[in-house]
Length: 138
Image (tube, rainbow, N blue to C red; front, side):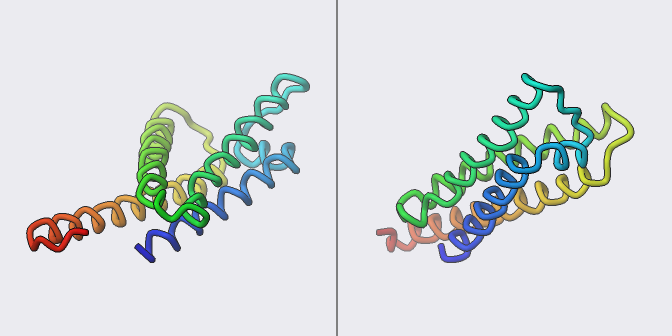
C-alpha cells in the first residue's frame, strides 16, 4: 500500500504541474504538442481541458493523502484513465504523421504511469487473493 500511495502522489504532483503549466503558459504548451490555440473558444477549451481536467485528475490521485480509504479507488481511476490515454495515443501514432517530440515524451510518461498502475493493481490483487486463501483478510 505504501508503494501505491507514493506512486499516486508522484502522479498527482505531475498532474498538478501539468495543470499549472498549461493554464499559465498555454501558448508555449500548446505549441509543444502541435495544438493551435485560436482566440476565444480555442483558448477556453485548452484552458478547461488541459488546465481544469488535469487539475481534477491531480485531485483524484492525491485524494488518498486526506482520505486513505480512497487509495484503491484512486489507483483504479489512474489505471482506467491511463489505459484510455495509452490506447488513444497509440492509435493516433498510426493515424497521424508529423508528431511533435513533446508528444512522444508525453506518450512515454503515459505508458510509465499505465504500467505502474497495472503493476500495483496486480500486486494488490495477488495480496488480497493470498489473504483470502489463508483466511487472513481483514
